[in-house]
Amino acid sequence: MNHNKLFDLNGHGTTVRREVTAGLVGFFTIVYIIAVNSFILSEAGMPLDGAVVATIFTSFAGCLIMGLWANAPILLVPGMGINAMFTYTLVGSMGLSWQEALGLVFVAGLLFSVIAFTGLAGVLNRAIPQSLKEAITVGLGLFLIFIGLEKGGLIERGASSMIALGDLSSPAVIATVLTFLIAVILFLRNVSGHFLWSILAGTGLAALFGVMPGKSGSTPSLSSYGEVFGALSLGGFLSAAFLVGTFSLTMVIVFENIGLVQAHTTAAGHPEKARKAFQANAVSAMLSGLFGSSPTVSTAETGAAIAAGGRTGLTTIVTGFLFLASLLFLPFIHLIPDNAIAPILLIIGGLMVQNIRNIDLSDLTEAFPAIFLIAMIPFTQSIADGIAVGFILYPLLKLADGKARDVAKPLYVIALLFLLNFIAGIA
Image 1: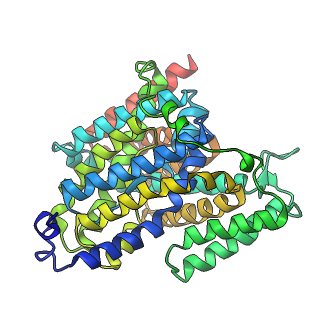
Image 2 (image 1 turned 30 degrees about the horizontal axis):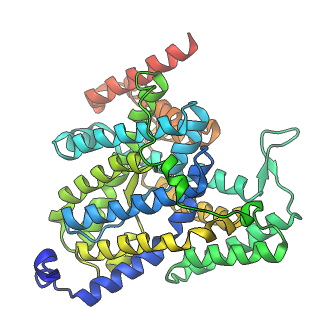
Image 3 (image 1 turned 90 degrees about the vertical axis):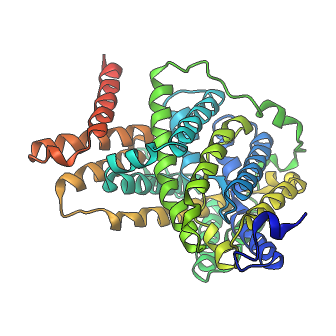
């Protein structure tokens, strides 16, 4: 294969060696997603081994599409926060089966593709205020922190309160705290593959404290992936839960990726690739439902691959094939305990919450809808309900303050649809 001709390495001022190195760096930075995403998907009822293989194949396909279609060094893997939405909102709160949730992912990805290949991306981007876009990210971050604290045993359902501090003397909780400290130190010191090392350290601590998972003796296999691949169901297509969930998920993946794609293509020195990269992202998100995973996103970890010299799609394809090779480590997934996963959720959640600094808190008609959107996501454990509350409050408060013209017409329609859904649920 003529890599230079296919990826225009000379034109991008790079070499095969530099691109391969960047792909390796990108992989070891993002490989933790295999364990974390599959464990979150398994809590929706999906077989764990099937979820692991689905995560690997989804990441492989996403990186391949990005590399060949957009020739951009952007890593596409299942997104954190969105996987929590899949399990805890679509399945847990809205009552969809995981098969129906996969069908919803496919439809949301299809809508994302329509938006990406037409001018609708610009229309939506202008219609939704920046404060609400940032609030969605912050709310997702708080939700991940909540899940991480619960998974690590640091909080539990209280006897006289909704939430109480967990048993800090428990070996499992001690292992979580120590793993968190290791993870934070590695992250702050920018150690390559910090989350992967954190998972390995957490697993070692679990063995030391005698809190390894009970499933560690089972024999994993690829056969369970047959239960996941193509298992998506459109049976509840016209139900309120499916429609509201589809709209909410589409909003999340569209707005999360618009910013990330722009940032990554600019950092790589080729902002003109943003449109094709956005399109690759959309197609990959749609195929996620077919492969059996929550949607892919343009990951923040892409920055590590770009910093290592990645400039073309060859970087992404190298990472994709390394994901495929990780199938060899499938038997070890069952050895990973909760205390190794929880700290990663806490750190990623904390990073997402930082976006609150981008919200204009001086204008209450901007601040209140954003704040209530943020609060409702973890408190109701429903990302869709949190988004709905924020999108309803925003035009209401603008109208009350005489700023009706500040609200784009599409947002009035969206708010009305969310309001009608709430009314239908009460009736």
